[in-house]
Image 1 (cartoon, rainbow, N blue to C red):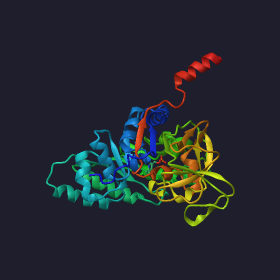
Image 2 (image 1 turned 45 degrees about the vertical axis):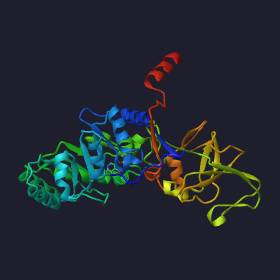
Image 3 (image 1 turned 60 degrees about the horizontal axis):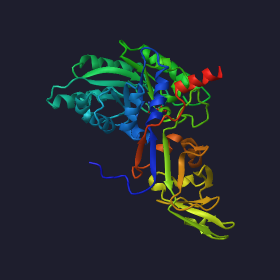
Image 4 (image 1 turned 60 degrees about the vertical axis):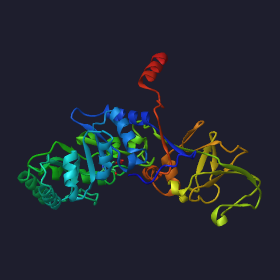
Length: 396
Ligand SMILES: Cc1ncc(COP(=O)(O)O)c(C=O)c1O
């Protein structure tokens, strides 16, 4: 049961272009090696874009599986009728092993202890279950989850071999800490460690994978049997703009609102909590119905937003549900305001917003709260291959 309802009676909304997601995935799938697959990472409500809608768009683009962070996110996909492989990337409760097996959802494990506990849960259930598929995480330098040595791998392999009625080892994987960095020393060291640990398996599982978006964009994706494609499929640069993109990514999410109140203030008038903004002259000020309870953080107050293609600064502190902006001239209440996305010739990206909050594009979109309704459109935002070919023919 869902308790939190998006507020539908308001003009603040997120618009997700599913074609952008489909195209970003399609472009990456076109580069896959014959035995490689792309799993779309749709955890955290599809990075704030909506898990099910995003998963379906990624599937249309050629994704053959999905990654989520927690079991409930996997169950949301199953309930929506998605029967493709799903891998839960975090460590789940061993007491939920029966659900994993019944729903054929793959679990990540980080030790043999988990298997021991899960096998007891499965036995005690008294049910005849299909084997639970597991992916063993290897910690090669992320320091988060995963077995760190060959002994740990050997214990897991032996346990699974002697309990093949309960478990099947489907994959082994690692996660890079600095795949989005110009300095490649850390990822190279992690890769060497990964290869050393993978070499120690008696029998390799079907999937040996290490690629997130950054690894796929800037390193050697061919070394990973699954490309776990997350932030890039939403059109966000994983390095937050620090590394240039080798392929075009189309941002999928726009955030817009409408002015609810417009007034003229005069020299010396102040705006918002703390009265930190003091008008220097007569200024047109608009109030927007969005604030930090929507995930539009207080720390974004050095930001600009777009009105009619023109940049307007935030005026004063962002409140819980409202914020103010300074207009270059009078606009009536009801005028559209773009906080993320295109307006006229200009564009504000999630990466740009993140620089004002001392954070990353990932966090900006994930934090957009459920209070904001999400609307889905399917628009080819960029030129299609046919258009490009046509242009080349005309030019040639
Ligand atoms: C283990 C793992 N793989 C893949 C991803 C996807 O990463 P990205 O969104 O950078 O592609 C994540 C995201 O945090 C992750 O934790």
